[in-house]
Length: 112
Length: 109
Image (cartoon, rainbow over all chains, first blue to last red; front, side, top):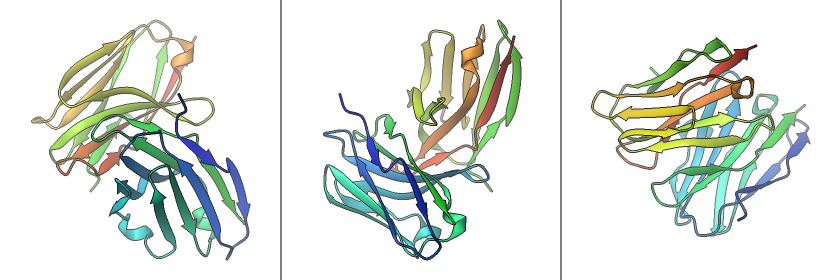
């Protein structure tokens, strides 16, 4: 079984660039989450989709972060414009209704 | 304040011993999940509980929604258990999941 897939695994961007991270959830899962992980803040929720509808947009992350889910098997997270403080690991997770979340391997972003 | 308080933030154990990690919640949570971050940085599911206890090998987890806490017990710790453990809890809306800040476990020979 394919788990959650994320691409790219690593990304280096310069300040002010636009980057797009991609996620493919587990086939058949209804919920998809985007998280950011840093050593200081730990894991923070960025966005949450249920059946492709945006349920939670992460409040403080609204202005430069935009997650989209145009179909049930693919989601993107756009960061525009990037800032050095965005350097972190970005994790995508999916789950089947209110069950266990399955996490992807993450994308490690470095913004110079 | 944080809705999920995980403790301790760091823990050292000698091989063969055991201990417990704990997450306290400031509000009623519907379910809790425990993860371990592996050497590649991926989050690996350990347990998902909506109530009661679950056991898997040397790990055992409990969740009490009414008392607002969850625990993860590790017994007979092995070197390969070293890593960072996270709890994550879902509130009464079911979909919002809040993570603890993690426990860095170091198992010593």
